[in-house]
Length: 315
Image 1 (cartoon, rainbow, N blue to C red):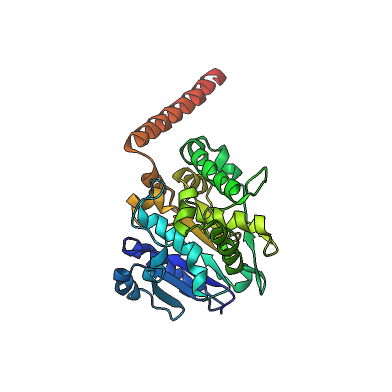
Image 2 (cartoon, rainbow, N blue to C red; image 1 turned 90 degrees about the horizontal axis):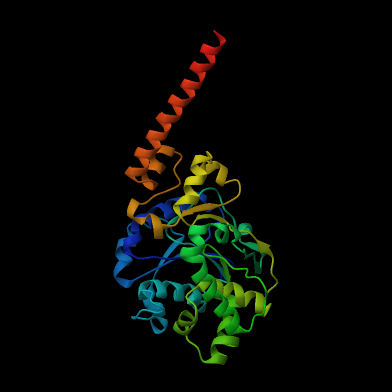
């Protein structure tokens, strides 16, 4: 088995995202890691046309059919739930010892190596964060944080993990097959739970992994911050653009970047742009543009008036 591979779960609607991801993967994959792409059986042909790399292997999601659902879970559509289940169940195929879960709307910015994902040849890095900046943001806190943390706390209660703070992550994380096998054997089988049952308790696959990792201590935890820069909402992206942060700047700290398609999909395949006007055009309304121009003109006139008054006083 490979020590570390990359897993992407996608479907035809995200074909353009995957094409961008594949191109960046081919350019920057310096240790010849294998990328496993899991898609619906009917989508395999379409993806095979853009997967022009011998290190990209396309698999049918039918391999996981016994675990998948055709009904909503926690009010979430079955397609979304099934991609979470596949990420947790992928270890059962025994293709690799660890795998990095990568979403199709992300892409690599610089060369990456096995050493980016593994602390030692048998032990992956554990990507664990508290996401305090998201808790601080009032819009994210009220729209997403409160509901998310409530459901993540349900995982802690279910597995008996008593910890006053919560370390987890959203996506783009390394999964140890040893941890996932232990989750299934020591928790799921013991409680007679399926992967669908896990999603019914809490539909957050990365938190199931990260919290069981901390609870079980089945592998040593060598902490690392996220490998991908993740923009959760448009304000985060806009802030970086206004500050003049370029892709090359992001690449000093991260191997890749993700503009969350949950909020940006209606804009097309949006990447991290260095063009501030283009980004502003995507993110602000026409009404805001009018107000911005009004206040810009008003402030210019006000400054000019002050300068004119100073000149009059001097004379």
